[in-house]
Image (cartoon, rainbow, N blue to C red; front, side):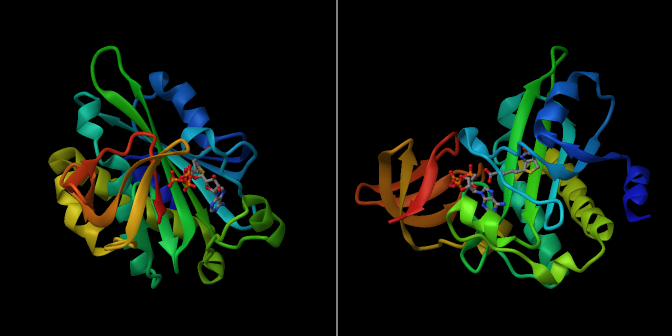
Length: 250
Ligand code: ATP
Ligand code: BTN
């Protein structure tokens, strides 16, 4: 079927009924991998987001998967990777007829609410290079109980939920693999304009938070060629690195 076709494109595919976190699983296995591996969980019981937050999903209404991809060179080569993944997701969804926006650094929004989350975790390889584990959670149909638990607006795509799951996954993976190959060649510079085209908060007054502390305030002006958020502050334009900081409207 559609998923098997991916294996032909040089990406090995494994589907499990249930696991804690596909990101945790692939990180644990990265050292032993010989090539890219896609791990799909029909159900995830301990999904994680950035900074120790959790990602909630239901087997009926979510896609949860991770892709392990080996990059040559050091960690700095991966700067902007989560944003490039956001561009790849957005472009694939658009091909399927769904318009989305991007929120820096790692969220895909639909009508202002979070539709998908991206979590990139890395593991250095002793002989050089880095394994990146790229985790994606996409809401298709969000049960009310789950939305109540998440506690803020979430978006879902009931229309896409009716599409064959494996065909959807294959389309997303195809877009992702293409984007990763381009990222390997050209870095985030090849994605910056495509990211800015979809910037959901362009021109909005925002603040950058580190934990509860406000680090910067200003008007969001898109990203630069390294994936840093450009912020027009009272002291002029600054570029903010993603790290563990959060972006809020204010
Ligand atoms: P940031 O702007 O720092 O990324 P965030 O609130 O988006 O902040 P993340 O770590 O990116 O935080 O994502 C985890 C958050 O996503 C959780 O705190 C939770 O509020 C929310 N969340 C969890 N599950 C879902 C889901 N299925 N759909 C949408 N949002 C979810
Ligand atoms: C975020 O918004 O902070 C990122 C959420 C990432 C969720 C996905 S679901 C598949 C993969 N496995 C995980 O435990 N997390 C990612």
